[in-house]
Length: 373
Ligand SMILES: Nc1ncnc2c1ncn2[C@@H]1O[C@H](COP(=O)(O)OP(=O)(O)OP(=O)(O)O)[C@@H](O)[C@H]1O
Ligand SMILES: [Mg+2]
View (tube, protein in one colour):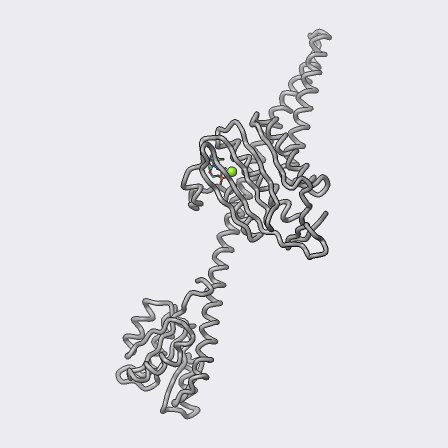
């Protein structure tokens, strides 16, 4: 439920005139007013709509207010729906007690004071709206935490694969060479050659360890800054994959930002370019990082086969953890992620707002994560 979405208020009275007067009194709340002239009609509405609060006339023919309240309370879906009784008769303390025992949250006597009725109803309307929003947030939180677990699992599998297929192979190769060197029946030249090959393989293994550990956590972001970290990542990608990359940053003296924002920029670039390498069949990829008009814009272009429309439209079942994760990170900072089919290739664009700095630091920007220089 959106903040401005109307909630339903159910008014139950056998007299049309009274229903109309409640309608006039409550019209100012701007909510959805539903009228019912009998208990049966009220139950029908309850089953069909999500009701925030019920205004219930105590004395009605056939099913009176107390009986109706009891029936409503027995239904598990409605046992917390607030009921306000309205009555011109049956106003002794004992009657009120009877009402409260049947789940009334309030008791209003006739003649109704319009301001009082409006104030009481609006309290329950607010409560209902907040409860619904909490439920939605809870649901979202559960969805996020399960996708986080899935992402962790996938990340572990990826690391395991890198360790096994990359590092494992190089170390096995190096071990084979060293085992051969120990054998007696080989010439000195052969052994020298094998030692050189083993050393080269161990060098590659060291490189791999460095890359894996940097990709897992880019420690250099803090030390060498965002610009150098991005250059390091692009150079490494080109070396490993053969993908031509270029980097353009504006302004040239791009300021430092808080680590949450810098990490988001780095992770978005990392995932976007890894996707280009894995999926795009591209020759070239360009990264533009721009700070202008109060926002940071990250643009990653490639000249590959183009992203499927369903992914560009963020259809949930077509996304992997990569794009969903990038979008989540960007949205957490109040920004937006866009994907577009280029001609050729794909354009990924992340827009992240940054707050203008106070007047005494002209030309600089800050974010809620804090500004660093
Ligand atoms: N630059 C691109 N060019 C073409 N297709 C792309 C590009 N980037 C993403 N895709 C498509 O979008 C899909 C979803 O990408 P996403 O990053 O969410 O998941 P993934 O890369 O498949 O897996 P992972 O969760 O490991 O990132 C990819 O499987 C691929 O089909
Ligand atoms: Mg991906």
